[in-house]
Length: 120
Image (cartoon, rainbow, N blue to C red):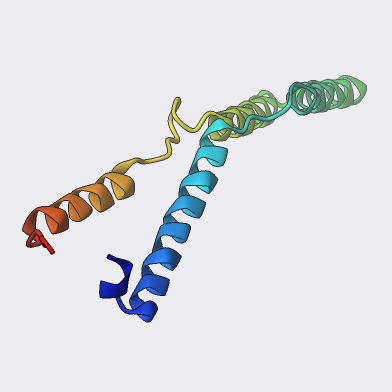
C-alpha cells in the first residue's frame, strides 16, 4: 500500500505527525510540571522578608503610611497568587485551554468522514 503514496507526500505526513507528537509532549509538560517546593518556599520567604523590612522601616521612621503598606501587601500577595496560578495549568484563574486541540480533532474527524474509502 505504501507504493500508492508518493514519497514527498509521505514525508509531509511524517513531518505533520512528528509536529503533532512534539506539540502534545510540550503541552503535557506545561500542564504537569510544577514549581519545586524549595522555589515556592523561597517565594514565600522573600515575600515575608519584604513585608518585615517595610514594617521595620516604618517603625524606624516612627510613622506608617497605611495606604502605601496596604498597597504593597496586596501587590505582593497578588504577585504570589499569579505565580502559583501559573503553576497549576488546569486549576485557578489562568487555565490552559483545550479548545485548539478540540478544533483540530473535529477538523480531522470531518476530513476522515468526507474522504472516500479506497478498496484496492
